[in-house]
Image 1 (cartoon, one colour):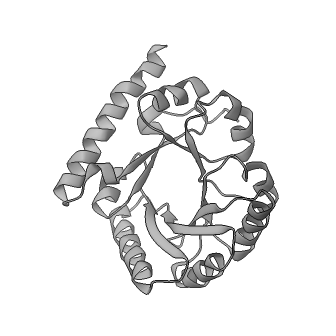
Image 2 (spheres, rainbow, N blue to C red):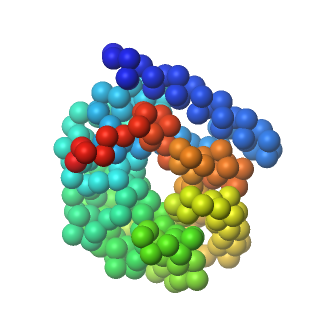
Length: 233
């Protein structure tokens, strides 16, 4: 194991410590927050090191990159798709993924449901919310969320587990708070078929704040594996 991969040990220990501290400050249990290793541009060897250390959840952003690396991953890892997903790419990931976190339209939900049915499986999904209303980001607007949730919940081969978001980096704490409020609002609506037990929120730069705002799953790439080389495709 190279020094670059060895740094995963120290980084993960720091992340776990930070989550424990943040959870303690707001009366939560650290074990109620899952750590996802975001694998974009990361070598499978480093990803597998994280799995060996107990990070059993991987997050994939790009379909083609995932397809090129999946056979090299530790088979014990659970894999979620977290990136923008085109309907014509669903067929490539429907089998290996245990959850698709980036569902932001009824059309996409329908295609996932169709292919999940064809593969005789029920796909866990999260609805992605564009909480900051940013044109550069995918995700459904908060005021359209209920319609998407109800539509997805009516589909036989989908299981709606909660929400995902990527808040704006500027004034992020404000938007984390808004997302927390939205999550609780939707949960209190008791929409049939919507369990609302997952709030996927928080990345390297804001995961401790996200924990304070109720996140149950933080998605960490750079903080775990180091700075990425975006020249890799």
